Length: 183
Image (cartoon, rainbow, N blue to C red; front, side):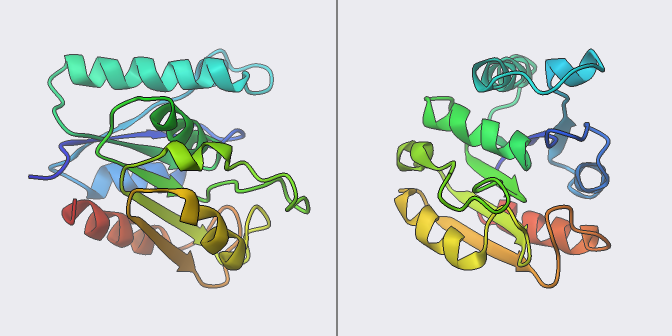
């Protein structure tokens, strides 16, 4: 039957109006796409909150969508937003899958500081869409890291793109739509 809602969060420096998140909302009907900001962004000040508070926001927004009648929810987002969703699922939040756009596998230039300890606790289908020149993780680094995820994983690479892909929203939407249709 597939998901009926997709909950998306932005990266650390962006907001719910990031061009890719908007493009997904505009194109994915009849799936409801809910773009949400983290609390620190709604306050319009300061750096991102610590992970526990961000994960709590993911859990709260997912609960609100379920309370509103969502039966099959996919979570995800760009960069930090997707990472927080993956951590929430690893901690037990129920989801049909994860859409992880420009996932920050590690800080730029620091491949020894992987952000994947929670991958072994993810057992839902995952879609990773990243630029093949993203300094937050190379294709080979991703291939090695996602092996820890027990759910099915699909990796999609955007040729010549970096961490914030430009001019390829239509392609990203097509990739996400195709993946969602297969759930």
